[in-house]
Length: 490
Ligand code: URP
Ligand code: ZN
Ligand code: ZN
Image (cartoon, rainbow, N blue to C red; front, side):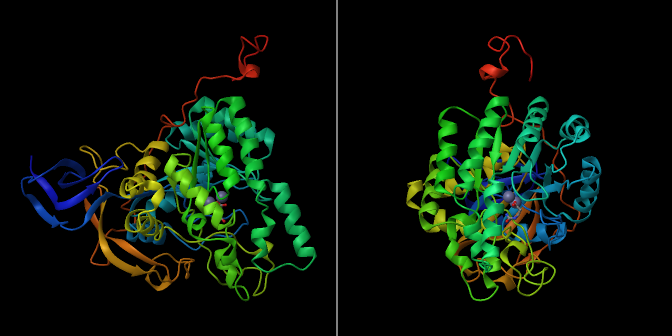
């Protein structure tokens, strides 16, 4: 068989090993991996470079109205361009139902935007904020069966939060239809109460955002969520874990055999609450929810990643400009409750993680930082969200790859970024290792510092729930007809 392309002489990284090999591509798929493969129609040298799977960013807010009602700054075109420059070939964003909206219409409108703009492959999580009967009993089952096999809910934010009873309805629908339930889990009452008290007393600077989310709000919500998920035997994914106490709750649940998955994000590994303590409004650029915590939390998160308690790294890209369209939409001197939460991160996620895991060799990973990098940023996300043919360099898989220069040192600046946020919270970070060429289904989409892909060339990836979303089949007494006097509830 003739090869369209051979990437020659590189060091191939997988989640389980690193080896020198050529990678041959035919019809957009990986056709062969080996030494001295026959010539392809096109040859690309990767000598001295790493050949790694394209990144999969499974939590990014793109062309979406936020929990606070603000449209974010990126379109599918700008977000996926930025993602591609950062070494990614797939992202999952959010089709967001707000109160009063019809979920089917939300998804069809959002699909139009993605089809028009996306230049890497994509899927959606279905945000549910209007858990009425039609949404739960009709629309969700239909959308899941059509290939949208993950639901996202918020336990906080006034306009989005799902209370305990509808949470159970959603978990049950997810179980019956085999979808993963992803959750922003923080205790709403504590956050709302703290916010009011702080503002009333004049503590309005952005730094108080971090105080207003008491650290106990995370483990409390995790415990409540896990109890609900255990009642219904439904797998869950806990988004953006930020505290050591949160890690402990997840570890305990997993030790009991529950299907609790978790992610964290670079902002929780590289930032602390002190980053919000800047003159004037500047700290707003570091405001996200949950807020960055302490250095000791970072340590717990790294350890949880190394031990497998947290399985994935996403960006939680949530782009709000530092102007009246975004962070300052309530005026030039808002109180922290009036400032949009979120940071850009699609383009910096992989370089930051590569630098920490591979170039600096975080000690928790005992010399296997490259494998961990691939696992946490591509292979595990593909497995958890069931993206067949994605997330690894294997024969028959999509030829989604990035060639990384491990020696290239880059100082991150917002001018060099391709999203529309206009700032990066990682400004001035120096990273070693950069994705210099990116291939999506065999097409070179990033080369020589330019994007070669056209908007709309990204493909929607239909997904079933897969293994992660499969219930364990272990029922608590209340749900087990043999132990609950015969009641059939699931
Ligand atoms: O602050 C953040 N992360 N904003 C984005 C929305 C969310 O909470 O995921
Ligand atoms: Zn969130
Ligand atoms: Zn988010």
